[in-house]
Image 1 (spheres, rainbow, N blue to C red):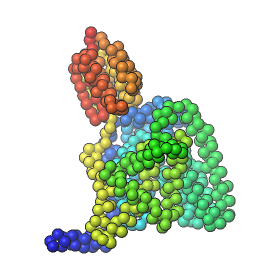
Image 2: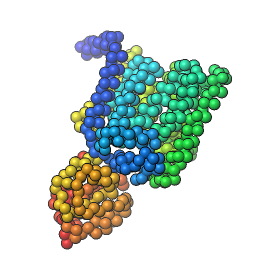
Image 3: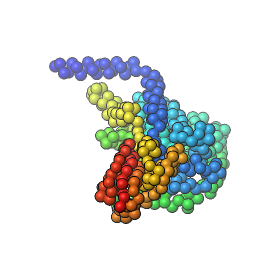
Image 4: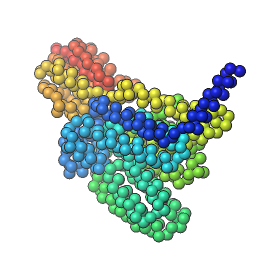
Length: 510
């Protein structure tokens, strides 16, 4: 049959390609692709989002000593991260580029470190697949250009994994154990999730020492552990406890992101399963079409690594377990971007599972076997390729404000949608925007309050309404809600729109 001959020919060609495949060269090409994707996003220089602007205002207007105190605008970030951000701001000046240079450096270093780690702990096909998923991961790329500590969280995660592997490889040399604990004492000042990673490393090292009955190394480890414990106690008293007491809104904001402590009902179990599955989409970056395969691959990869690489599996899974416990105790939200540091822990397991499935399938048809890695990569690759042409720009308020500066009359009033205030306050220092400014108030689910607030502007004449970071909860787009009422209240004179931001000019004369 002609069809059979084509399939046989294709399978022969695939086998020949795999036989001559240069994994090392392919890995460096993937690292290069990852670098390009991150640098392109950084150079696009998108506007600061509402959350970025809030943190940036704290960094810009505070001294190093002031950064030791709880931040304003419901913000929190590790002291080490804030100090590095302040350093680059002083060195390079106040701009989006200087604020994002440390996340970019973290993202680029993470690429190289992940490459080194997976090369040591995984089979060659699995290391290549996990590296590719890491290089093209949508959220890993995006947060490499975000004024937040999520990118540096990933870097510190990889540093701790690498250090733990180094301790195991050096057979618990006392000097190496001491260095590991000193490093742990330092990194917890730079990343909140570092505590989970360092704790996982300590647990694994102690388990192996007990298993091998290494009494001297065990006692030394316990003694050395006092170094990071003292460091954490100081950090907790200096920063963490004050953040919690000063910003109770941080807990209420993330109330729905905490896992149930003990699942007591089918609803609790369903919610737990949903939250864990959601991690595959955000922050790993898989599309809905790949989620089932990824979930199956994770289970298979876990079983495979338990049999073949138990210590490596424990090093990858213990931090995830500690994170779920912290979430159940309402100490760390189990949600999206706050879990970006889990990506380098999950990808190796998923990749091993995919390769295992492919190898088993290859006994029947290598052509079908090759589809499994292709399926898992296709969605992230398409997203990464699209954003090379059109970089991510969720809230482009800067060009809206520049348009406003060119077209606003001195007597015009500016009304700020409440979620636009932080970005406006950051950018107003670079612009000349004279005239009165009205700050809007949040009133989600009580939309009548918005209408009452807008009525008070009647008689003000020309009023510019600025929108960004629009709330769309409860099935209502608040920008559309405002505009529909303003069209009744006055006459629309002008509108300017950018991705995720807009300005409307209304005549609200009596």
